[in-house]
Image (cartoon, rainbow, N blue to C red; front, side, top):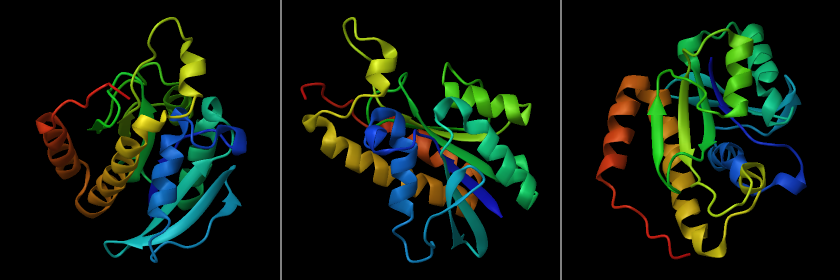
Length: 198
């Protein structure tokens, strides 16, 4: 069993916000016929699927972002999932909108969801797929920015990014973290920088 966790905040009020791109990627993946329906378990919405001949548990913690680690720990403990078989999908304000970055390990980088996962797992040695949402401009507080929705001019880039992130998840499931990092990070470095005229 492999575990793919998309981070976000539960409830309609947070749907479609920048902080919820992890949820968006898992919702995209769940449209595949290999993935079952969502149901509640491990303080999360979970769906089981098959990929590359193995089982996958997709999870969207419903504990709010800052408490995501509890849900991850429960699922890992129940299925005896090891760290190399866990991938966390989350937003990143340090990356431009549309940019992806895959890492096998690393610091939370100020992300409260990753901080709580590290606290519950006791390590930074878990893979993560970071999805750029851009940084706030002017004097807008960070919390207001990450809980805001994407501007109309960003929607096309967002849709393309969610699809590309879903492909990155499938690449990790099929070929592992090293192939995923080499492919995704190399592809991202070759992309032209998006225009900021939205």
